[in-house]
Image (cartoon, rainbow, N blue to C red; front, side):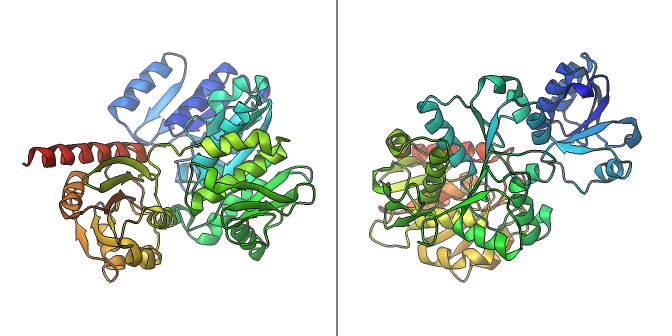
Length: 461
């Protein structure tokens, strides 16, 4: 990327990705213009800091002269249909995502993991497994650490382990992972992609630059979707499934079994693993295929597979009192993730034992598809945020639905109604940005609301 020295680059979006891109570009002697349509106090403070280092900052608007730049780098949160981006493209200015920028500066091979759900868990699992077996790696990308922020470290790595989103994949050019993993496909971000087909095609860009000697590890149902759309993959495809024995790696009850010619037979009993649930079974299947591709033996992989636990905000038990369990699943930002959580929750006596808290920012998803799972498991739902009315319309035939103003109210109402053996579950099926800064912020707010409710209940207030 030394050929960018002295050139002019426009960075659009000043979140974590945009800021990492700016830092990388500055080390290369690039003239940087930074743009963000927002104009908060925090952004103003950041802009003042980088302006002192030679970055021209434009906050509160996105009006620039497109032909003034040699390249534009766009953050994944910025929609590609913005007039500024269209103008840049009309003027023949290359538009890269931050992932592409970081990739061009990286000096090692990449493992890239995408899918509607399970990306973060699988990325963390693969990174942990490789590190425990003396393969030097870092977890980066959509997981929270932009690739541009770790690109300078990659010369010392065996491989970089990346979580990548559909937004990031929209803006790649040469990005080519040696091992590319697609965990699953379910409706998500349709407000941005416009249709399920567009969403799938964005995800499938993960494979478009792979060579025949690379590996594509794909969940069986997702592989069928790609084939149905006529999407061609040049690399060697390896499939996995927790339900279909036609896959190369599949489950027979809890036993992981391989049909691969050089690795046939039983591999691991998932009953020995800390991770549970159908969705986590497929995360484990994908991770062990990555390990096999990286030439790890089963014996080397088993400790990581068995010991690994999900991170916070993923079906996380935050408290239990009086026989009632409180679970934080704030990372469930789509319907598929909600249904996985409902099926995973513990049963004590009655199958219908969940008090569900859901709702948030709308992503143009079809909430009706969760109706059967809601009807089977949910005693009552407390709905909040901009989707509350849509959720009530979709689920009121399956469970009693109540609209609430916030998490404190939802937790208190659910707690009052819960009896021993019940579960109070935050699993929103929506993005968080209508009421919270992130899914982490929402999850922490749920924890606080639970603690407040239990303290109030203990005092008998």
